[in-house]
Structure formats: C-alpha cells, structure tokens
Amino acid sequence: MSRLPARVLARGAFAATLLALLPAAWAQTLDKVKASGSIAVAYRESSIPFSYLDDKAQPVGFGWEICQRIVDEVRKATGRADLKVTTQAVTSANRIPLLMNGTIDIECGSTTNNSDRAKQVAFATNYFYTGTRLLVKAGSPIKGVADLRGRKVVSTTGTTNFRIMRALNEERNLGFELMGAKDHAESQLVVGSGRADAFAMDDILLYGLAASAANPAEWAVVGEAIQVEPYAIMLRKDDPTFKALVDGVLARLMDSGEFERLYTRWFQSPIPPKGVNLNAPMPRELRDNLRAKSDKPAT
Image (tube, rainbow, N blue to C red):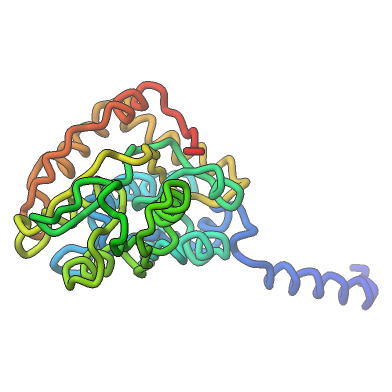
C-alpha cells in the first residue's frame, strides 16, 4: 500500500480541523441533525398561546405543538428514530443570533416574518396574522394611540412592535416616552406596577397575557390595530431543503383540517395552566392563507 506524503497528510489534517471549527449554523440543518443525532427547538416563555411555559415549567402552545409535528418529520427524513430533542428558551433580542450561530435549529413562537429579518433568517409558511394594539389597566383613559401623548409606553425589546411604536411616535409627534422590557411578562409587569401607562404588542399576545393574569378583569386591550403582520416559524437562511420539509408539514396540516383543529384547541378552548379561553376567532388573513400558503413577509 502506498503512503501519502507527509505534507499532503498535514494539509488534510488541517482541513479536517478547520471544518470541525466551522460554526454549526453553516451546515445544512438536516445534515447537522443527522450527524449529531439532536435537534434544538426554541420556545418563548410567555408568548401565549403560541409558545409558553405551563405550570410544570414545560413549553406548550400552538406553535410548540406544530414544532413537534416537524420534529417527527425530521426523524423520518434523517432516519434518526433515536433523535434527541433539546429545548432552548429564547427572547425577542437573542432568537435571531442563536439561530444564526447554530445554538438552535428552529424557533416556533410569535416571530413576525418581515423583510428586514429575511436578510438574516428564513421563514416558513405564515401561520398567524396579528396587529399591534395596547394593553392597559381597566378603566384607563387610554382608548387608542391618540391618547398616548405625554404618557409612558412599554414594548418588548427586539420586537417589530417596539420599532413600530418608535416610528409612530416620531411620525405623529405624539411625545410619549417609549420604554423597553426584556420579555412580554416584564412589559405587562411594568404597566401593572404603574411605571408605564400602556404596553404595545401584538393583540393576540395581549389577549393571552390578560386572560392569564391573576385577575383578568383588571386588564383591557384597546385601540385599532396599527399594522397587521404575519407570524411564521423561523429557520436558518439558505437552507431550502429544511424549509421545504417544514412547509410540507404545514401544508399537510392545513389541507387535512388538523391546523384548524389545533387552532380551536389553543385559541377557542380552555388552555393550560389556568384553563382560560382566549375566544379568538381565526383572522381573515389566516383563513385565506390556509389556501394560499404564502410565506410573504410584512414590509
């Protein structure tokens, strides 16, 4: 048997070492999952009813349940019946960096699919549509955006809602003070403690937070929707094979009627941990997308 020259072996060893040091995010997701035998699924701690923690501190929700269907399909596609699922809590601020650097492989929560984010990540078929509104204490004189003049408004850092409110403040010269909080639960607490007068966020999340509060009657969601935007499952960019798999799972759920059954379970029925019912009818835009299956971003 002939032996390779030492310099060739050295170059090969160097190349192998370099490959091992490349960020996991540079690998195609299914290849990465098959090689490691593990998939990292991200969740949000308070994005009710999409992805949040139950009374046992376990992730649950509409988006989370859809992610489990996706994981099942990944098992089949990779031939890894022994696939290990690791979970990772993410925030509005760190969800994109953690996806890009390979810490997580998929995020099933309440992330808005927009053109700016599409420069860094990819999105599956849109699976919800929502608009920015305001959460206030019941009896508040704030009934809409015009009433925010001279007030304090909080929104969750890293969200499109924070940017929408900042732009709105400048465009309309409303003169409110915009505050940032690390997550939705903290934003609600800021209003509850009187440090802000209103919490600006996606209306469906506000309904979930209000319904899950110790005393739901203390809260009210007010104002017209400022901007309607789609939610979608977030994936790494430039990985068409994995996106096709995820879109395929969503298409089958939508075509079979299972998607609507899941919607009824999480938006129109009592949900854990307190058995509250959001009583949220399916948005017209979402019902239309069950047929269109669009992944079009918000502008």
